[in-house]
Length: 124
Picture (cartoon, rainbow, N blue to C red):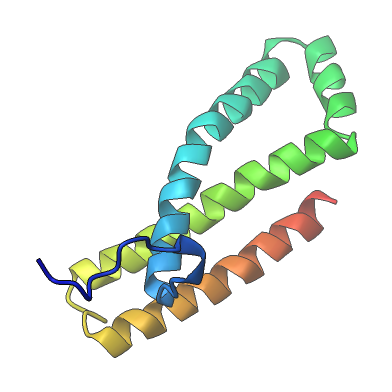
């Protein structure tokens, strides 16, 4: 047995590359969208069922908590879409090198931050 192998890895000290963070966030946003789509579908159903339920939904969406939930759902959708497009571009053979993957991850992260900020401005 190799005596120099790590026995107890301290996860907090491990430095992951940016591509790992982008990939992990892509998975988290996908899971969050599972719940977020339910919220959006409920809002769609409430807005279409009657005029009174539309007015109630309009009043509900003016609250800061509802705006935060809506923003978080749309932020997850925006990030997941941008990271998914990055994966499609890489599937086409563009940016498959180490440097290309890192640059693609930085671009995807920057675009996601800009889009999420724009969504926040639009909602509030």
